[in-house]
Amino acid sequence: MKSWGHGLALLGMVLSLGACRDADTGDLEQQLASLRADPGELALEPLPPMPVYHSVDYRFADQRSPFQVRLPESRTLPEGDVDLAPDTSRPREPLEAYDLGQLDLVGTLTVGGAPSALVRAPDGNVHRLRVGDHMGSDFGRIVDITAASVQLVEIVPTGRGGWIERSTQLALDG
Image (cartoon, rainbow, N blue to C red; front, top):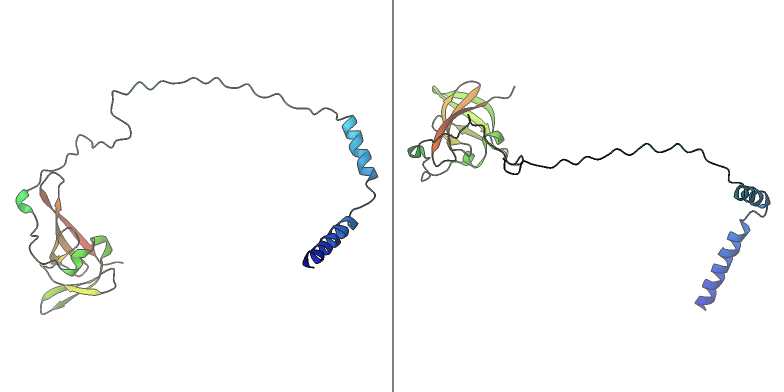
């Protein structure tokens, strides 16, 4: 019974679509027939001449690869000092888990003549630090606190087995 219903619905749709057809297509048929009989000529411009390709052989296989970075001769890595290695046996302080670029100096204050720095960590907590405290992932030790900045000395590896001290600062924003 269902198949009869579907069949009748399909028949109704076909008949309704057939009724939408315009019966007066004679003019269109005549126009198409005249175009088929005399297509005319299209004026096409000639194609431009093809350029001649000249291949270039790569003759530098015995030289340095252009895809490898090379340090300039004047920029050699410093040896550093093996005895300057950071003390890895001391307990790490909370702000040593972050790079200095992730830390923000939000203020300084002086209590009893001793300056302190207020530093915000990426987790939003503000830490109070004094001279001698450590911060940053490169073993940074605070050596001076001024009204607008914190001076640090970091101990960084040279890449050749030694260590060097690097001075840096964390400044108040604007």
